[in-house]
Amino acid sequence: MIRTTLILPASPDVVDAVIGVYNEYDILQYSLDNSEAVASELSVATDGSGAILVTAVWPSTAAYQGWLDNPERERTGTILRELLKDAVGVGQTWKIDQSVSK
Image 1 (cartoon, one colour):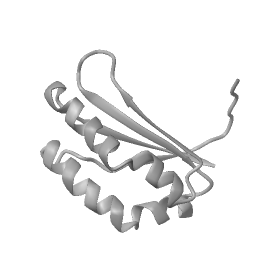
Image 2 (cartoon, one colour; image 1 turned 180 degrees about the vertical axis):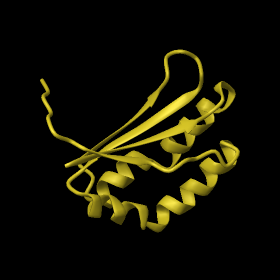
Image 3 (cartoon, one colour; image 1 turned 30 degrees about the vertical axis):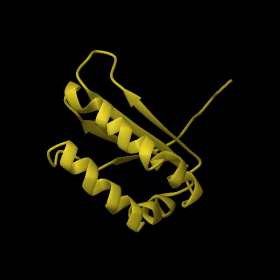
């Protein structure tokens, strides 16, 4: 299993618009329904900086690559890049070595 992280460096004045894009296009649910993703989350920094963190859990890097190749991701990515002034970076992948939950 791997976790992916993507930091969207939003300014505080566009956070609601970015979250609105995720809501309007149901991006997280779409990724679960149309990929091998196991779980995903969108989080907003509590310090007022505007930073948004998107994380997901995948069974493998190949499964994540399948999502990266999905044409819907490019369409919504174009909208997000416009809001974020092309500051959308590249996600990182992390091997999950241990996990606990309640």
